[in-house]
Image (cartoon, rainbow, N blue to C red; front, top):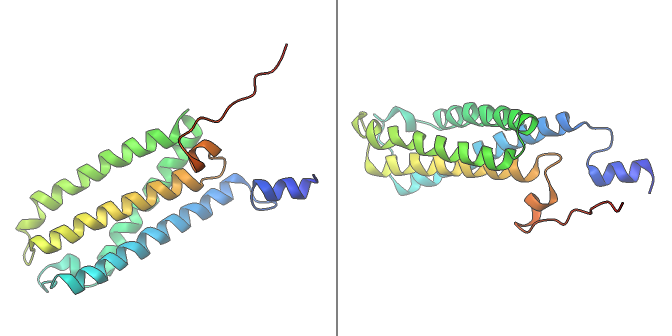
Length: 164
């Protein structure tokens, strides 16, 4: 196997892990935005958005409130990959806690906002879940250097033990 062939099997030729991770971060953010925009538009067909409810006046707030957490998540996962032994697990736990915390205002504050309805609140919660699931899945599954075990199954990968 030549150097170029082994580089191809590892990923993009001549591209560092950092550059590939940045591209993954961009792809993750875009995927979360697209999926949440889709939820916004499908939700608008199912629930009549009240014009007084500023969050759903158009898709822009959905995009903004998806971009910022996605970027923070990409940066956090990058740090965890560098400084922790089990970044996938740590990131997933943190993401679950943040998801639960992000739903609390949807259940407590949002119902008091002008124009809010239970249907719109449900759509907000679905958006939180869709964004979290997309971000966690993409980062933990496709990050450069992610172990084969994490990508393919939960079965442990046998590690060869050197003979003495």
